[in-house]
Length: 200
Image (cartoon, rainbow, N blue to C red; front, top):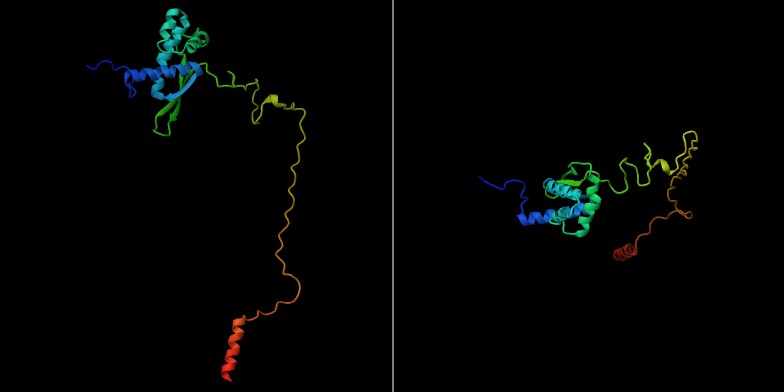
């Protein structure tokens, strides 16, 4: 019977795999979202959720256990003071995986691993812009950009008419004497004089 078959090896030794997870956990706590392969994200999510549960305890012992996975003290402080308090009312399920499709190079399935309350910079939960502006349907600007009420319609601006194109005239020949027939080259004159002299 083969033991120790739980989990994916990911083509790495145990030490290499755990070091990779430590780096990914640090990046996840720091930025709130990481992009990795789907298999790595599935293996990392249970580890990350366990350290968040420890962060919700807030005890000294919990901090020491989290330090086994995250070495940077400032990131441990951020986990306990900023990340974990956001999930006090949630009993697990702190992370989500968003599939991105295959990677161009080797076809590996890629995914985002992020906190469930993660928001992109410049947006809030309602999908508004950074200044609380609601997008206007059918237009490329927001309502706070100075749209007038429906009663006051702006007069439509007339499009400037393009200037009429003038047809190009064919090049004209210079005025003057009528074209004379082409003169024979000088070498032809010499030949004709030599023929006359020979006939005499």
